[in-house]
Image 1: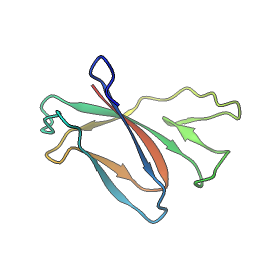
Image 2: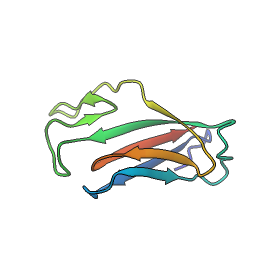
Image 3: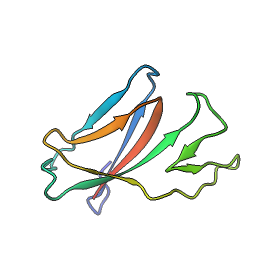
Image 4: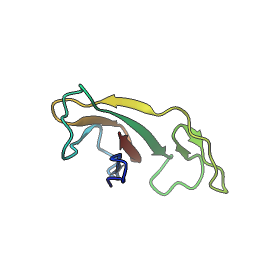
Length: 98
């Protein structure tokens, strides 16, 4: 989603418990050379795909009421093939560029 201010937000999810590696995120109009763009990443993690406890978003525990205070996001630089988002378990991530 491209916001009116030019910021781009991408939701990346991994539902495959066997997948480990990098997801490559390419954004139209981005130079992908690391010179001007960096991205912030906040992850949603849990013990299982259907977890409703021990869940974190942005490194913070999500309460049963759904409240949390995220920690500083992971930073990624654009590379020649976009943003390489490391994935090591079933999870989701919000990538924010701009």
